[in-house]
Length: 289
Image (cartoon, rainbow, N blue to C red; front, side):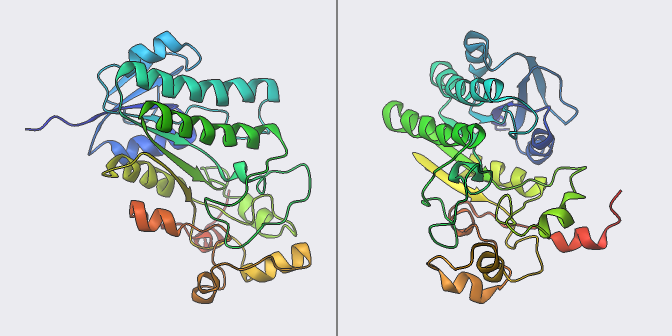
């Protein structure tokens, strides 16, 4: 019997980590490197801190791939002086530890916040629609900056050191307990993240698919639902929010579905085989505690 690939997962005890472990458990041997033991189905747990490079490197030895989820997940729970080192130095350590430990592929958790459109200190209109992976990235706060630097660090290690680097950039993740935010976010006149959302199982699906991508140097993918979380047509949302429509690069995206996501997930669908299953409409039918 062929041995299962061994995947080191940082942040396995976090909200998304739990779903990633569930997704991997029947296909891979998932080993969690984290400060606390996960509740999810890990093959093994290694206690450690991503800011401790020697310990991180030791954990990487003998692994076939690294999924790096450990990070501050939003700008609201921690101050900038903690967000920056955990997200930026932590990412540098992930890639350096993988390089030193002999791991060929690293999958990093990016964010739509790198664009500057999700969380912003200054008004920002999309340069064009739908927003894709090549959209200009102009963050105006520290969290978005850290996610932009995650991409830059990943590109550097792919270009200069030959690591295979995949960056997955989920939009607003509706983790358990956040379902009640759906109606609030849908009603926003100017959305915090262009009315985008995704459920954790779809994010986990994307991480598994990134492991299975046959050949890669560096790739980044937006990960989200296929629609917005608002019943209002997507282009009408933008026009009412900003008083005008930016250039529409892919009109067929909205012709096919008037409520289509304002983030273009077609690259993930085409290259990874990602198939979103999220639907905000089920939240509207569900009793929210």
